[in-house]
Amino acid sequence: MSVVDVSKMWSKSGGSFTSETYDPFDQQWALTEGYQVLVDDPADDAVVVASAIGIPPLGAPHPSGVDAEVSSIVPSPLGPVFWMVVVTYTGETIEPGTVDVEWTDVTTTEPCDRDWNGAAIVTENGEQVDGLSVDVADQIVIIRRKFATINPAALREYRRSTNSDTYLGWPPGTARLVGLSAKNRFKFGQINEAWDVTARIQFREPFAGTTAAQAWYKRWRHEGLLVKDGVNIRRAIDSFGQQKTRPVLLKADGTEETDPDAAVFIHTQVYGSIPYSALGLV
Image 1 (tube, rainbow, N blue to C red):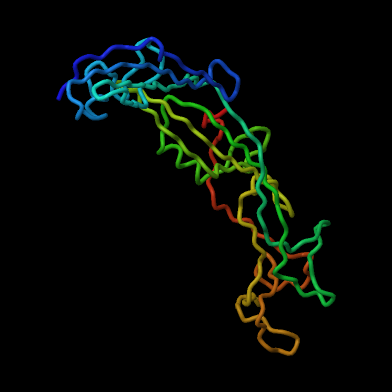
Image 2: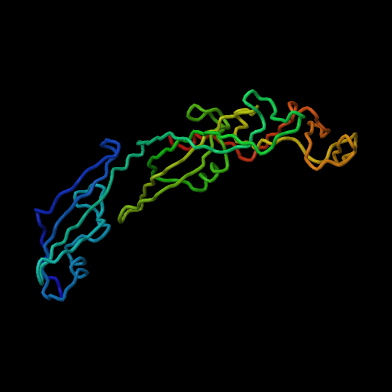
């Protein structure tokens, strides 16, 4: 079993060029070549034909030098010992300066303890109302671009940090990298590489007395079952001297606060702060 002859077919040469952004520097292409293959045994199969000397192997670069490699080899029998093989090269331009930016938003449900005017939500008798929530819409920017190299160790710091600089018009503390993916493409026979990076950055608008720098802080009401009484700490009690079973509001010094509108809210930092401009996305 052997291949007798491999010859190129001019009638099967062709290709297609497309661009999602209508940009000559952001193209995808598919180039085809056809070959006639003659074998000496009808038992020779598609594996023998596809691996014949003269048929470009998978991953081989296009002979013209364009950035395209063999992605498929399709043998088709035309007779007992005669085959046609269509080879397809695929590739795309790699232009690091091309940036694709998309704006969208996401809605989250957050606890609500203040009305639109900032007053505490309480009953007629001054008790805090718990369990209410409000929908908050955060803007999200999705940025796609190509990079020659990436540093995963450095990128992981951004997954635990907010912006320390003004980023896309948003003040420090409001932006957080909530998603990052990078797809790698290796060129056949070469050591250089290219990465398709997609980043999702979510922007949070501060509200309810929160500053921009605290937009991603954890905001919680200072309350508990224990209150400070002079130098001692005791269980909160009601007007009948009975221990309370629900947390009471606390002042900053730990003593009991009886005015709901004077409730103390504490903002706790849970993310670091680093410059987002260093990401190099835009």
